[in-house]
Image (cartoon, rainbow, N blue to C red; front, side):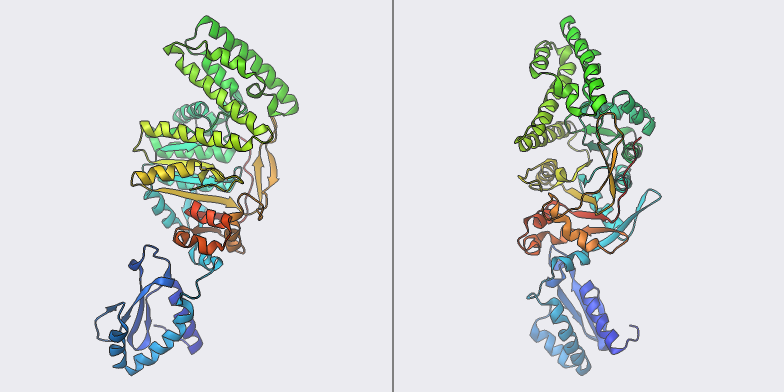
Length: 490
C-alpha cells in the first residue's frame, strides 16, 4: 500500500469502498465485497464484506460476536476498524441510497470507434452481453452518421460470431431486393443502383453511412447472411412491387390490370416529383377498390407471389393513410407494430435457432410499453418475451446523439435535409433519456451506461417519473454520443 498523508488515506478508503475494490487497510484489515451474495452484483449498498486479520482465517460475513472476539485481540486493528466503520457508514447506509445521477455515474463507461472497431472501457462488456443473447437490438435516432458507424462496428463483430440474420425497418420485398444486391457482392454501389432505379423505395438506405452499414454486416456474416424486412413497404415502393408482379405468371386479365397500374404509377410519380409531396404517389392516390379488384383476379397457386406483393401494397397503403388522417395515428402505429411482429414471427418459424440482429427507431426497440404518448408494445417487447419463453436472452441498446445534426427526408426527388437534432425535453416522447444526457454532459467521449444493475431499483430511482422508469426498464445499455453529424446521401 503506498504512503499517504492522512487526508489522502481517508480519501483512498472512501473511494475503494465506493468502487467495490478489495482494500487492504494497514495492520491487516482487508475489506472485500462479496459480489456473489445478490443477483444485482453492482449494487454495493447491499454487499456483505470479508474481514481478514493478520494470521487468522477469513471470515465471510462474520457475526458481531465472531468479529469482535478477533478484532479485540488486535488493538491496532481495533483502532483501524473504528476508523473504517466511521468512514463506511455514510457510504453504505441503507438509509441513504444513491440517487439516479450517482448510480449513472457509477455505471458509466466509454466507447469509441477506431478504424471501424469498438474500443474503450465499455466495449468488452457490450460485446459479452451481445454474445450472451439470442437477439441484439439497436434502437436509434435515424440519420446520424456516428450512430450508423457504431451500429456497423458492433453488429459486424457479432455477425462474425454467428449472428447471420439482420432485421431492418424496411418492407420484406425491398429487403429481399437489397439482400440479392448484397449477396452479389456489389455492396454500396449496388444499393445506390437500386435506389436510382426505384426512388423512395428504401427507408434510410439511400444514406451513405447506412448503406455502408448493410454492406459491412453482409460481408461479416458471409454466405449465411439473411436480410429480413419487418416493416410496411415504403411509400414509393409501388414501382418495384408492380414490376415484380408483372414478372410473375399471370392471367391475361391480371397482367393487363398490372400494366395499367404501372403506367399510372409513373404518372403519379412525375406529379410527386414536381412538388415533392409523397401524398401524390401511387400508393396513396390509387383507390382501394381498384387494388381489391386486382386481388380477386389472382386466384391460382402460380399467382401467389404476385398476390403476396399486392397484399403488402394494400397494408402499407392502409398504414400510411391512417397516419395521415387526423385522430388515426395511434391506430396506424398499432397496425404497423402488429405487422412487424407478424413478419418477424414468420421468419422465426422458419429459422427458430438463428441468432438475429435488429436495427430500428428507438421507440420500436423498447422492452414493455414504449414511450409514445398512448404507449404500444412493439417488436422489442415481442422479441424479449419470445426469448425469455425459450430460456434465451435479448439485448436492447439505445443509441442517441444529445446534440448535433441529422439527415431527414425532405420530399420526393429532394436531397435529404440537414437539420439540428431535436432537443429532448420533458414533453418529448424520449424524455426518459434526459438523466442519461445529464450524466454524459461534460464528457467529450461517448458515454455508455450499463442500465442492467438499475433495473431492480427502477421505481425508486425514477422517483415517480414514469418516462425515466420506462427507460430503465426498456433498455439494457444507453449510448450517448455528445455531438452527432448528419449522414450524407449516396
